[in-house]
Length: 137
Image 1 (cartoon, rainbow, N blue to C red):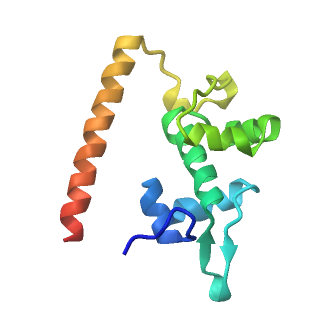
Image 2: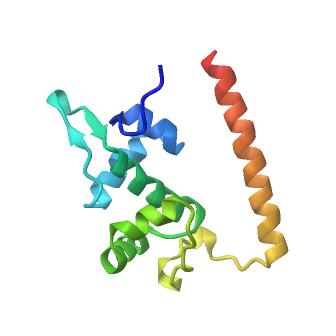
């Protein structure tokens, strides 16, 4: 039985939903003071729906938009948590400042090359999802 949209998520459920390993979520907690899951006895983490929304924004900014950790911290400091949530919902994100770009993303691409990369990424994510589905059975 699937959980409702307002249910709390364990770290494994949150990691699956965000498509990141659990250790990444624990690492982000050390880097972003605004990520504070509820902890129960034994240190078990439970993520509220708002926590998941913020994490989606952080993931998109770091993994898709090329922001660095310091860049996301600055965006949070200057525009607040609502901006991170809106980024996670797919709303447009202003290009990061040069100092906020990860070195690996510092390559200038024309629109056609970027579109090809986005299409390839979508294909790879689809293939990964199919493989994950096969491995779960």
